Length: 94
Image (cartoon, rainbow, N blue to C red; front, side, top):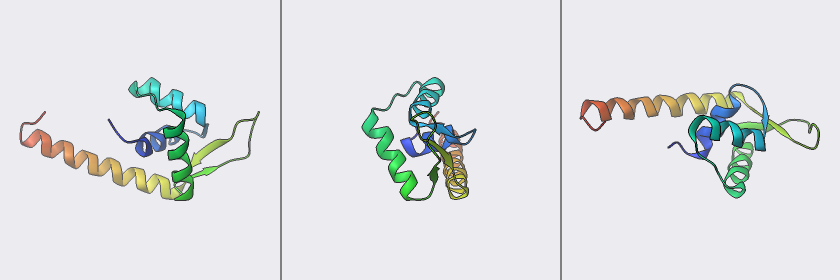
């Protein structure tokens, strides 16, 4: 399964979400449920790297949005993943 960074960026690529909504979207799409330390630790790292940005709080929740740098990072990660999948199919590993 993809790492938290990729899954969080994917979750935010559709629309801004707060932490719990990010977790729900990831779980709904993949079945993966991160603990709070994993989720919020990854969010903090993504924000520090300027891949996501916090927005103004709404109803005691702080939504996040993906940045242009985040979209570029996600695109590169997904392209790398496609290359690995092609390689795996070529050698019959799938």
